[in-house]
Length: 322
Image 1 (spheres, helix red, strand yellow):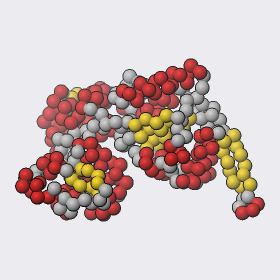
Image 2 (tube, helix red, strand yellow; image 1 turned 60 degrees about the horizontal axis):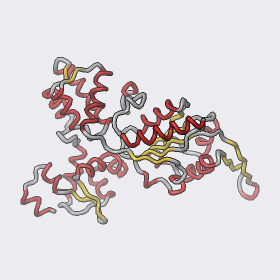
Image 3 (cartoon, one colour; image 1 turned 120 degrees about the vertical axis):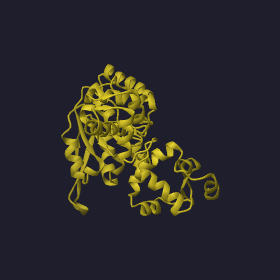
Image 4 (spheres, one colour; image 1 turned 90 degrees about the vertical axis):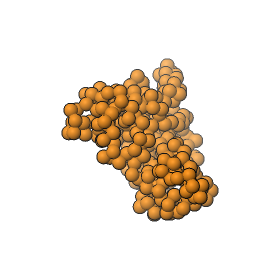
């Protein structure tokens, strides 16, 4: 997570995602005019695109308190019950990584989201009874990078679902410029362009690279981020001109060389690269797919011709392997 001081505080600070913002503004304004709490919201898309920031802006626009948690943090029914019973009327509950909620927790959420009640089972066996607790009208905002892992009954209970897209280079440059002003970092146009191109079209990555390049400029230069300084800093971090990191290249190299370009299942790919399946699917794969460097097929992942060329495979090898 990037520095909280860099998090957008309002719609003007939040750069990009124009369609999502436009729809959300209408949705929020309508709820405010009616004096109602907003319906539940589901935000999905690759990591680092601003889902958490949107949740905080929504809370600020609605002048509501926001309680933040995550799917893995809610392990037992009692954990969720404690959170829900401590909410006040109009509060917002933000659950990040919602795809990691277990099914038992999801089932407790159904009546909480729909009827604003919490069913607690007391006792076991024939003597068990259900205690029904009324909940205040709250809004659940859930964020996920893997919407397909949410059950259909849970997805259907969200009144609004929005997909966040990767950012274009112009938007990333605006984000870096804003962050540089906040961090009081001097950066020239060429240095800005290099960092923007290597930011994986993702604000979180852009801010991380800006801070690491700032460190390098302060130690190895005069504190100003130029094209030369930015290039040297990124090279030291093993990040290339398209933003590919060592692990990205390891995944591509594994597909091309270890498996000779044949389709590879995600479990096999994870074992061969010593990475977690979820990490490959949620962190690395979305950007490689966006670049057109890998494809998903019924038989597994394959590297595309574009990835061969990026890694410097000769046309003869490329033809032979694909």
